Length: 261
Image (cartoon, rainbow, N blue to C red):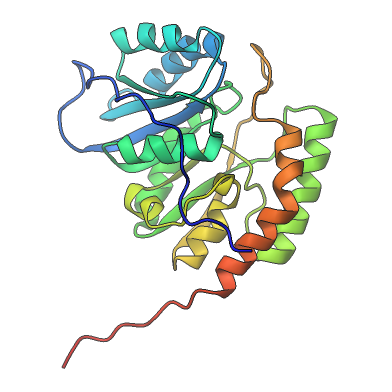
């Protein structure tokens, strides 16, 4: 059975107004962050992003995926003093749905995605953005966590999943699970959207005729809270979604279009 072409997230609250210090209209960069129950990580991560992107016009688009803790209050506080906009799913629909919601609402030409747990290092964003701008076109720059700061179970399961995925999908990407990625907004909006699609972005970009490159990035241990999109999520969807994405790859032919005579 093919994967659904569209995700159906629960209704999202409208994005908060554009922050006073951010120019109106399109921006070079939007940082999209899906979160669920990450209240203690909101303020520290926003501070790090603002420091990393000083001098780069940007916005930070948080999507609260149905949190049951103080995440909404933490986002309201963050939006009061930084370039933060926040949306909220009424019920949790998963990380991919949250990313789709955030990218659709974003005003940036380029999108940087980032996990909300603080394990991705915002200081890596400018380097990935520079690589994306230098490459140009339909490009995905994927972070590669060379040194993982996770539990043995997570590291082992990711290693197995990456090996199986690479063999089946031939996406030439050592670490598709890294949340830190940079790509054009327009490219993402052309991709098929479905639950857990964020784990297969390199294969989907290649299917679309784009290019994928990897950049080593820093990875840090979680110091606040606990994982909300965890190991069981990855294991539960691995086989079904791998088969589905392989089906998508084989059922699409990219035409070469000549100008009309």
